[in-house]
Length: 84
Image (cartoon, rainbow, N blue to C red; front, side, top):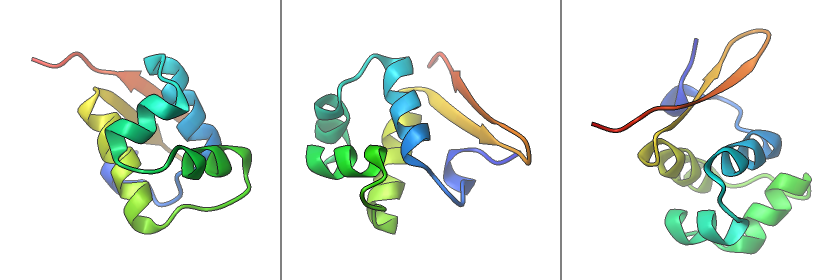
């Protein structure tokens, strides 16, 4: 299983699901990750793939909030981990 830092292909659906789990708007994620809201909107709608840097920033932002993505051959799992 791969987790946030190891995910090879982060999708717009995964991003949207992560935001929903955290109850964040696109604007909330944009501010926290330091990216434009339009970038997130285009990514989630399938209109554009983010750069590697933006993908890394999004995944790191989710991880900092305690949200972990696990990916295997058959499924993507989202898990909210309590911080100590």
